[in-house]
Amino acid sequence: MTIPSFETIKRWQLIEDWPHRASVDAVITSMIDKGYSSETMVRAVRFIGAFIEYQNNRDGGEPERLDAGDIDQFIASRLSSGAIANGNRIALRRLQIELVRAGVLCPPAEKADPSEKVATLYGAELFRRGYSKQSITGHVWLARRFLRTVFFEQGDISHLTHIEVRADLTNNFEGRKSTSLGTWFSHLRVLLRFLHATGLTEHDLSAAVPSPRNLRFSALPAYMSVSQLNSVLEACDLSTIPGRRDLAVLLLLSKLGLRASEVALLSLDDIDWRSGLLRVNGKGGRVATMPLPKDVGAAISDYILHGRPTSGSRIIFHRVQTPCTPFETATPVILVARRALKRAKISGTRSHHAHIFRHTFATIAIDALEQYLTLRRSLGFKLQTQESRLRNFVRYATARGELRVTAKTAVDWANHQCGPATWSSRLSTVRAFARHLQVVDPQTEIPPSHIFPPQRRPRPFIYSDEQIADLLKSMLDMHPGSFRGPTYHYFFGLLASSGLRFSEAARLLRIHPSRAAGFWAPRVVTWVHGDR
Image (cartoon, rainbow, N blue to C red; front, side, top):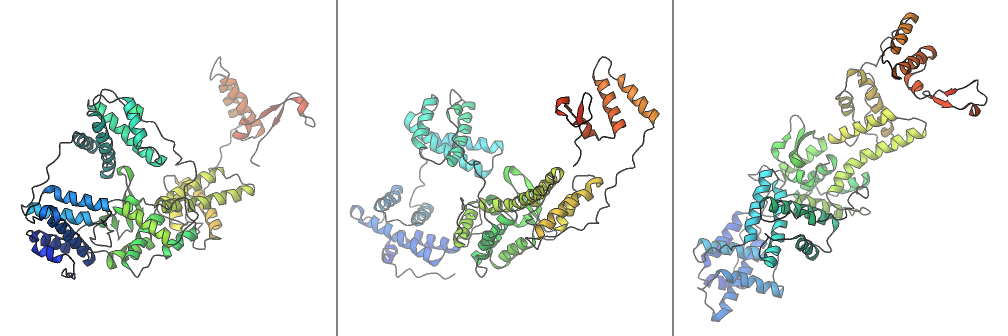
């Protein structure tokens, strides 16, 4: 890495004359070791020089004197004048750390904050219950915000009432979106139950937190068309490192339907390259294994070999700009998705969130199935059994990351969790669906027709007249004093004498003779509902 020259900085002479110059050198050395760019280091040194100038101009200028509050006062003055840029505060905090190590400053004293003590206990309890790191961070952040307000206004939380909780909600959450309120209010109920269970409040105040209006499921999820998805993927510039990384991220979102957090925390140990399998640490601690499509695996390997920085972390995806740290939360993946949608100029969708790729993945298969069922039913087919089978197949293929029908997936599904008697009919159902899809998508594979032996019905057993008579007679004696015996007697007698099917006999209707004009019926006329 090229080390920049700081001599051209306007206040460099002030830095050289500063009695604590060694601490500035330590800041520069640490930034070089972490791989920061020359521009970032120049900005940091320039802001440190502004702080030293501020110190020299205060109280007649005493460069040796330095208090812990001087850095905070300088940052506050720059904030009030609007003359602070992104990263400036971090530069001074690094300087403060080096000054503490050199013994120039004392470590900042921890303030006795009762709200912080309660928030720490709350976080420990959530960890004991098995909450994830991300969930605990969100819960504790809201707990700190609520507890600081309560301790500031009330001085104590032991006598907190429902009215005070409602007042805090009105003052701090008015005008927020209902989606955010739903999450925050749920976190607040958990906190209030914890306060009551630990004896910090007299009553359980969770009932004081209402449920906001939730419009999340009032409409279909936002999704893209196939052409829009292809335009987003094609907009990734594979000649650059960000383009290779973004393509791999977007393919995981769109071809496998992963969540942003699942993509961000994907590790090198989660991919079995020999077997072509991908292990996903999903929501709620669930672990799933799914096939890794060739195009997704090729994009990931291309990024690992020609874009991923050298790192001791096993996390696959890293930041491109220095410091090239691995992804730790879902935020970088969300930003990648938003930039990709903006780059491809995608419009007409209600959402530009990373979940739109996951919704697109699921919607493409479901939409194709609905079109197929509508068309077939318009031609007179009922498709009751076929619909349930095809929906089960779509769920199975979607879980495997398939966007189109393949012969291997169809065969694997046909003999999945069922007996050999239905293998052939299940595969035949998928084959008809695949022929429909191949018209609009030539890459659809039609499964072969002779993989499984055809379904053969067993040879029927023919009862003799004597056996039928004995069966009907025994039914009368099955339930003495009940209508069940005579019902069975006449029902099975009707089957034996007329040849009706079970369903046809069960659905017989009684029609009044006045409505049976034209039929031979002395007293009762019956309709027989057959297959057609």
